[in-house]
Image (tube, rainbow, N blue to C red):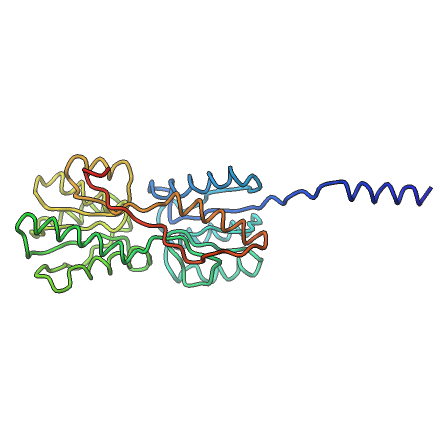
Length: 297
């Protein structure tokens, strides 16, 4: 009788299929205000729908804040995350928390903005190159108006967020060797209202051009130009509905449109690949950028 039961149990074990594990993966962005992050989430959700074995959650601070982002990472650890897709608010503030996450076996994938801590892969725009493109677009438009000198203002997020730091560096590089002067950057934490005030202050100083280094900064620049009634030229980053409308209405020259949906989609696929023991073909992926003008939207 025991032999019969043993044979029966063996058959059940052989014939029962091995179920694929459901992975717990969280996306932690800098905040949930910007449409850019909502589009990263959409890309991740698309990948989740295709994969079918992921329990997914998007979590983020209410505003760009290192302490709040650290709390989000700690919550992901406590909730048993297998992987975290992270857009780091700053390169250094979260590293100790990431080290703790890694000690629990959690895989880290960077989206948009990496920290100074090893990860499985990074999916982001080549921000310095894109910043240079923004600068070249502004120079060409100014030259077309017969303007070959003057002051330029930059409105950015902060001095810690690597993605916007790189954009600013690339933008400044475009003006090397020209007769334009770039004023001291104003940092407004990506807040559209504060960015508008900073841009308006630049306009009163007589700038001929403005650059917004992220979505909130760009919205602020466009709104300031709109309210001033001047012909200052503005260029920016990201492609929210509001930014696109400011371009259509002529208050922004162009924006550097990233591909946040690609970041979220490919980041999610990469997370599952490494969790299942696979190897990634690339670990530092440039997700691209396009110049959107009134003619190309």
